[in-house]
Length: 168
Image (cartoon, rainbow, N blue to C red; front, side, top):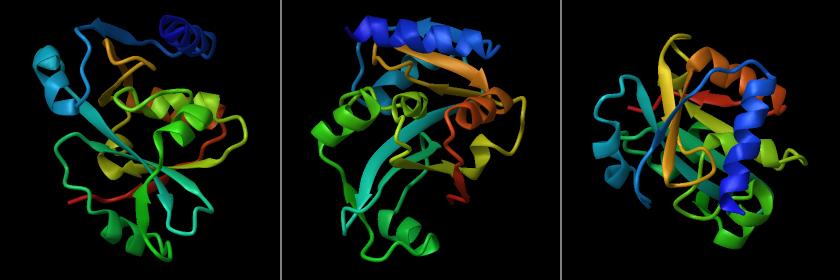
């Protein structure tokens, strides 16, 4: 099942003329574990946090450069989210984005047909159109690289207009 999720994503990217670079590697569950396999890559490696607001009204996917400190209460304050953020349950992640913990990727928003997830992007992911962005392609046994410009086109295609935040 998991491999077909990746295949379906790769087909979608191809259908909207997005070129990608696929890097196969052993299964990883954290960005830190993934980094040794990406030593040849230049660009931004993504860290992804799937959260909900405390009132459980909205789901959010925070996508930041892998080595950024993401303070959830500061991000909530910046975005005026009352009550702040807390991590969403894995079942909500599976039901909404079609991925489990360890496989979270901004590319999973193509499964969010209802538009339930608000994407929050680290400014560095959108500042330079030619920058390569690396994240999982729905599985944690590979990493995919696409340009920032193509990443933005993908988000437009999936009707997910991101909120851009400057992470320190």
